[in-house]
Image (cartoon, rainbow, N blue to C red; front, side):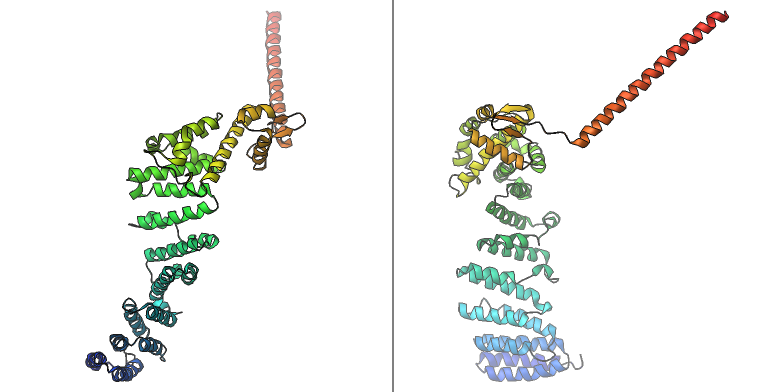
Length: 450
């Protein structure tokens, strides 16, 4: 600071504010702008801040919204304008947004503030908050695509002056708008900006955690990523406010089980199924515990009996248990998911047959699976392509062989081990024969000498 204008500014600002209230806006602004030049050139940041705040306040008190927007741009663009002063003025102007008499003036003020804050790191937080408000206004007007586009321009994860919680809130809002706009690819990309470790390490973020996983579940529902959905439901189930509420906990655990059963079989899915089966809270939902047990036990599942026992509860609900989110007949994709569930039952049964049979006829498989020969071939071919089971079909003979051909290296290694074992036995036998010969020859020699 070269010169301290604090005393002059403390006298001038109240006078100009009174002039503004008396509708003498031009006189008040002329005095403020003249003093602003002096304080700015003298690098008096505190006094300059007071003057800039007073200038926008005079325009606001007089209801001169156009003049307010003009002076925000004017004062921001002045040569060697002080950053601290601009920050104070922007923060003051942000408080006027709610007081705008109509939507048009509110939007104009927000656009002006977003324009003057663009590219300025020291007011990045204020710009982000204004952008979020503008996006909300666009969404309320029915322009979801416009709202999503506005909010996507923000890269809040790089903002150093914004708190972590607020950053996550912004990213979640970006995800929500992208989902509302059916932009699933961008939603997936944006979701990677949030580290799930934040929900485990930060305190009092249960609301953000539940919102994040609900959005991820909606994203998974789009392309039926059931395994990922089961993990998301499990994370919801492990959240404190959910695990402590029996009703919400049971609902989340039901979805965990169903998503696992709908998932394509692989090592990861099998591991998660077995780990989930040890969850002590499964005692509260015996139907779902029984379903898990059916898929863990290597026995054939009778689809007809399963439907008669559980379809009503899973698809239409009962007085004690409402219909599930995934299979409900009221859901648009409930019927399709029920067909996927039937397919998983068939795949389980084929794996069981492959375990206990080396060769079996297609007719017998059709009988065991309660399917036509064509359906059996289609299901079996699908599992073979996925390398879940190994099978060869002799279609003219109607025979399926589950014996996998031995790898040449494995055959050679087995032959080598057998040969080593044989040579070890030969060496041991030779040693024992030699030993016996030596014992007998020694005994004979002793008898002759005697």
